[in-house]
Length: 76
Image (cartoon, rainbow, N blue to C red):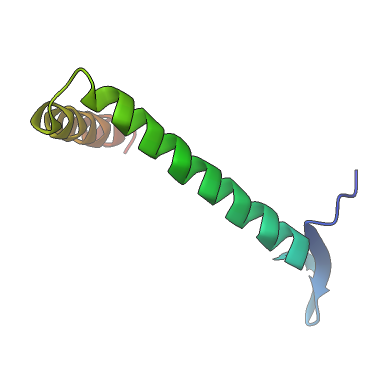
């Protein structure tokens, strides 16, 4: 299933190693996806601000960050 977003090539000094490099089309797709994510996050934040204060949202992210750190410790 070749789509042209990455190219595969072998490392010159090691035929077992396969390297991937993003193509110009792959870079364009990545940038478009990042823009979509940025717009989506901004819309979500706007929706949250209709019912929550910025302090509420900041507290939520603080709790989520702390929760993620606790989970990471469980997998070490």
